[in-house]
Amino acid sequence: MEITFLAKAIAIGVGSIAPAIAIGMIGAKAMESIGRNPESAGKILVPMLLSCAFAEAVAIYALVIAFTIS
Image (cartoon, rainbow, N blue to C red):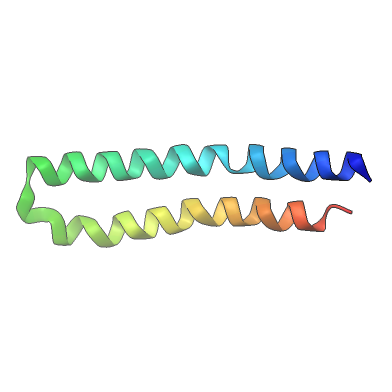
């Protein structure tokens, strides 16, 4: 019983590290790009949001795996 809690914690912990780093890098690069060219904010917003959604999907997959561990 206790080992499953540990397995779930490790699965969600390790599975959420890369998406967190990716979302941070996506946001940083988008803000840097908008800072260099403010007129491009409208063109940058949609790809940035899609990239964040795809990165967040990986964390959701890790959460699903953590819930399926029994």
